[in-house]
Image (cartoon, rainbow, N blue to C red; front, side):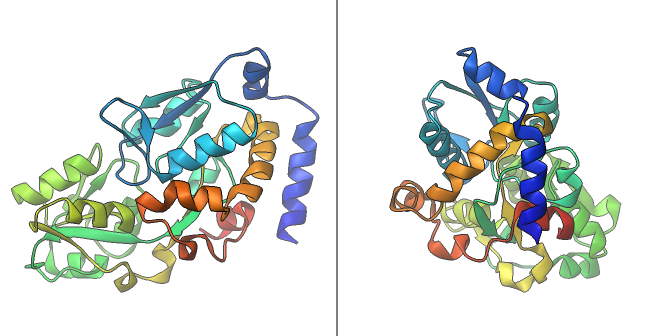
Length: 273
């Protein structure tokens, strides 16, 4: 029933080429905006796009015949505004498909499911494993602007004055290291990566200590007027997700089959998350 509704929505739009399709037909590049988020999307030392969300987006675009691509690194909070300002045609970087975002972003079908974790000083001196722990201890919580975890923290009782917003994961780590904050939220992929690179000074908490509703699905974001392009992207994505090509491409980022199982449709996620 869910997929039927999606099919009807797509068929309504595919009769009319959107701006991105027009750009591609005119020989212009597909412009990708992504934030510097470990594991999901980040630039290497040469500025080339890395991370599993970027890899998946680039591989799927290539399958569609789109090899003329430009990429730009932007602060997390600038991704959606940049998409609407027509600076980018699609955005990556581990963006969760959420009801609030679905009103402003046309997401692809899911590319992975992941949970939230905290980074804390080694030894977890304040014994923080959940949002409720932070609220009860009056601890300072830090995350990056535009993150879905801001709303999650408030929902779980963390006072607004105890929430610190910073540009990205690098600044979250800096706040924890300096003692300005007690726990920093990000996806488990990011938290584990940062902990592994910290020489034993930072640890990642267990994502299973948080409620099930904090589990979310990652998608690639487009503008709603590009629904015809999104439909074609999803067709190629369906054949790509879980393929040997994909698993070989994302292996270095820790993505395993468990992250790909049980995906509902984006339409369902937009209604329930």
